[in-house]
Length: 373
Image 1 (cartoon, rainbow, N blue to C red):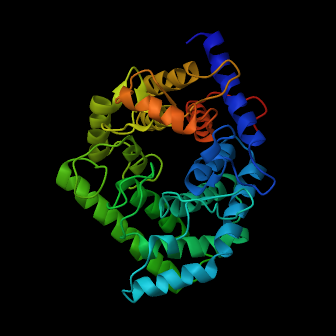
Image 2: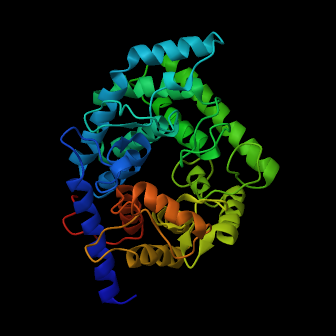
């Protein structure tokens, strides 16, 4: 790699920080995308990865503003959480509308529009990001403890209920990537000394049950699968190892999962979500190239990690904005026009794409100008 190439990668990492900062509200919430109407809200899942990237870059204030927003959003719904947990424990039926939503306004309000709600991954992912941030910078978790404990109890109590996946689809299944995110967050909370001992034990038991369930299914299939009991592949399965740690990056189950993703979902370094994806034609997702590159970097495949980073950078606009996906290798090209008519051009910039580029760049040792030490 030439010095010029490295400078370009560094500059895009800095541009990613700028775009993320510019789209973080005064409340601490991150917009998913400022230019895409249905993404002008904050998702706990997207936000967790964005906050983690900002924490890695040294922007403590940005990450902690998001964690404080999460704490307020969850704590404001304590009565709803307690009611859902009570009804679930009693075996009473629960309507999907009774669960917490997956996206909120920047002010922490509910959007009030029909959406694919009941997604648990974000309620685990922000706890994982908070725990990683606290360990990275020696920061306390106590300022966020009220909402964090509620999130841990909520996710741990409901994790066996089928829910929408990362892509807000297939609500009839128990998704591996969702369970991995919940397990990581619940396991983190179970280790915090500030959490009282009886609850820590219950959370740890739940986290262990989640891990055992997912690993048993992966052992059955020889690799991780899109949902429990299936054989389907999904690129989000990378998260089971990187970063959620159900297994180590070099574990044989993850190696087999990555091999299946490479065989079925990777074209010219771009990464599809899954083999039947038709959203905007089913293009290559930049954030998934970031996940794959991150996995490569953590498993010793540094050159492959840089190749993913360079591929992402090559898809930036002239103003340094990264889209959600590109139309280079569409799975269902006939479906693209319908989405363009419905919602307009693909989300650009997508903050999650910028977060994964920044994470991968830092993982590979790319220096970010102005990075806080």
